[in-house]
Each structure stands twice: as structure tokens, then as C-alpha cells.
Amino acid sequence: MSAPLLQVEGLTVSVNVKGRWLVVLDGVTFDVPAAGSVGLVGESGSGKSMTLRAIIGLLPSNGRVEAGSITFDGTDLVANPRTMASVRGSGITMVFQEPAVALNPIMKVGEQITDAVRRHENLNQRQARQLAVELMDRVGITDPANRVDSYPFELSGGMRQRVMIASAIAAKPRLILCDEPTTALDVTVQAQVMALFAELRDQLGAALLYVTHDLPVVASLCRDAAVLYGGRIMETGPIEDVFTRPRHPYTQALLASTPSIDGPTQRLAAIPGTAPGLADRPSGCPFAPRCGLAQPDCSESMPAFTGPLRGGLACHHPLVPGTLGAPGVPNPADQGVTV
Ligand SMILES: Nc1ncnc2c1ncn2[C@@H]1O[C@H](COP(=O)(O)OP(=O)(O)OP(=O)(O)O)[C@@H](O)[C@H]1O
Ligand SMILES: [Mg+2]
Image (cartoon, rainbow, N blue to C red; front, side, top):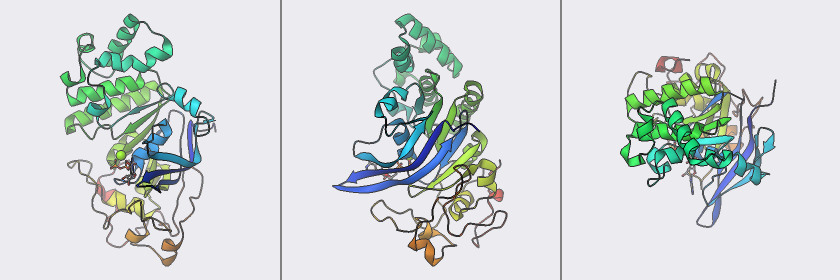
């Protein structure tokens, strides 16, 4: 088997808060195969955005990588920041949650779409404009020849997200990072943008690393899943394993709290308790205080992340696939998560 396109291993990131360095990501390990699609899921604050920001080299100014590697196409981007700079925008691109914030309000959308690619490929103004029109057409923006000269405020939220996607695919990247790209959109537009992602995934051959709270979205779009909690990877594997035969009690609780695929979009809220704060990280498993199956050893030591990168697990007392562990926790298969 060929090496994965992206290998994140032991990635540890801290942020400085009032003079103290607090760990946000703690040994995060997973991989993304070439042309693969991985859904990175977890509750709010688990470190999903921070993981994407570390991969694309855009950590907040008070953040730093403490340890680990991010190997893209054979080169460790942590050890080679120059490669990181050249890879960003061509090899790896990112679609953000809020297009209104990510787009420049005083630059025409056509220029924004081709901004990075123009520099990489030395396109003149006419060629860049033509490319922008083609890309806008490709992502389903009607009348692109006129809209290419629009400013972001002249477009709807759905159109703006399509503009973001067009700029992310402009340079034919090998990996597209998506940070909740549809949550700011209304439900019908969400469905259209999701369909666009599915189409692009199949047509472009680019790999997707897709962050969302929405497990049915991951189930429909991605081949593999990585489950993040408290800055640690709890479980990784093919979607059908992780979503129908979860081994980690956290994965099971997350699935059980997922609203039905047909129901209204909601934030996940049904797991009792709250996620640990950065300043009070437990020394054992971060999920132990909320885990219905925790034993004394769970709060004493963090379980090592075991197994191959695909099919990894960090749990002292994993569930036996096919059985339901915690009493009272509904079966994920009944929650509308279909794979
Ligand atoms: N610049 C920052 N300074 C200090 N703490 C930060 C900073 N950015 C993020 N954090 C903290 O790091 C943790 C992980 O944040 P992150 O944004 O990666 O979470 P997330 O999983 O993307 O959550 P959400 O689903 O709400 O977007 C959170 O506790 C967050 O409060
Ligand atoms: Mg986030």
C-alpha cells in the first residue's frame, strides 16, 4: 500500500493564555490517504479547528507546535516551514466555516478565486479572469461572467461559500481542509453545497479532511472517520466501523446524541457533563469523568493510542463491537446514522 498523502503523528499544540502554555492538541495521530476522505468529528472545543490550522500552518499567534510531525506527500511540514509556505494554497487549501469572514470584502470575488493561483502559475489578468469564470461555473454559480466582478456583499451566503470552494479548488490542490463549511448556511443551501462537495470529491481526485459536528454529513461524504475529544484522538477507522461498531465509549455517546438524519440540524448536546477546560486537563483519559464505563485506571493514566493509524483506539476498556456498553445509551444504529 502506498504511503498516505497526509500523516499527522503525535501532534501536540499549545496556546499561551495569560503567560501559561496550555495543551490544546495532545499527540493527535491520524492519516488521510491520497484521494481519501476523512471526517474529523468531536464536540465544540475538542480541537478540530486547531488541527486544521496546524496542518495548513495558520495557528493563532499565541499558539505553537510542541511536538509531532505533519507529513504531507513525504515532507514533514513542522520541520520544514518553507515547504509549508509553498504547499499552502497549492498542495493544501482550506474552506472556512464563515465565508463572510474569510473573504476580503473589498476585493472582487473573481480576483479572490484566482489570487493564489495567479501567483503560482503566472497568469495574466485576462487568463485569471477566464479561469475565475470557469471555476464559478464549475461550483454552480449561475451567470459567472457577470458575477465575476461582484463583491462578496452582493452575493448570498450560499454563493459566497461556493466562491470559497472555487478558490480552494483553483490550484488543483491534493488536499482540501474543510472547517464546518456548511454550518453558516440555511438547510436547503447546505444540501446543495454538500452535493457539490460530493461531486468535487469524485471529479477532482483531491483528498478531503472534513471537520463537522454533523455525523450524518460525515457518513454520507467520507470514507474514514477520526474522533477527537479533549485534544486527543479517541478512535479512527473506516466509517462503517466507527459509526456502526464503535469501540470507544465516547464515540458511542457521540453517536447516541446525534439527531436523526431527517430531523432538524442541532448541535450535539446530549452527553452528560461538559468537556474538560484547557487549564484542568485530567491526567488520565479526558472522557473518564463523563464515561459511564470508566474504571479507576481510566482517571489514572491516559490509554495509549493503539493499532494502525487506520483503526486506532485510545481506551483502557473498549466496547466489544456489536454489544452496547453503557446502560441507557441508545444504539447508534437507531439514531438515523446510516452508512
Ligand atoms: N487563540 C486561542 N487562544 C486560546 N485558546 C484557544 C485559541 N483558539 C482556540 N482555543 C481553545 O482551544 C480549544 C480547541 O479549540 P478549537 O477551535 O480547535 O475547537 P473546535 O473543536 O474547532 O470547536 P468548535 O466545534 O466550537 O469550532 C478550545 O478549548 C478553545 O477554547
Ligand atoms: Mg472549530
